[in-house]
Amino acid sequence: MSDVVITVRGEHEARVAPEEGVVRLSVRAEGPERGGVVERISALAEPLRTDLGTRKQQGGVREWSSQRVAVWANRPWSSDGKQLALVHYASVEFSAVFTDFAGLSWWITEVAERDGVQVDGIDWQLTRATAKQAEADVAAEAVRVAVDRATAYARAIGLGAVSPLEIADVGLLSRDEPMPAPMPRMMKASFAADAGGGPGVELQPEDIIVSAAVEARFSAR
Image (tube, rainbow, N blue to C red; front, top):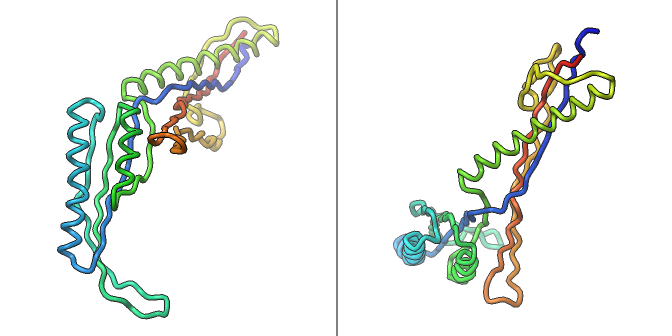
């Protein structure tokens, strides 16, 4: 009996607790005079720079950055269609990677109450080392799933052990006729914040989902 070719897909996913929280916030100011707006935005942003620098030295923040002050102006329109006097605007954006989630919670609560400060969002992530290891583990398990599936198919038709011919990421396995690759599943971490009844914002980051999928082709006889 000639060899039978079996083509399967293996998938696996794992949930990993996030290790870092990346907070994004912006500081904004506006006014009739450009000089005054620039002075105000500097006064609002400097305490944040000092605070984040201190937290980095203490170990609660891995890294942080801030953009240069952006300044622009325009003439707004009134409700009756009249163009008003020139208004100047300024903004600075901050990004900080927190490793201390309790410190992040208290810090967000405090800075969100400051004049001109807006918290734009939080992204949860793994460290590079953890992400690399998790991806390798999940990929290896996806291959094992493909092997088990192909073996089950072979046994179902009375054949023995399978031998690998090809293993590839989804959509990269060679085919006699071109086929569109399936759309990858998008997975990310999210967060819930509940400030009711507590002294600060309570962050509840969800586990980060690390997933892998492979296509494999085996021969069995």
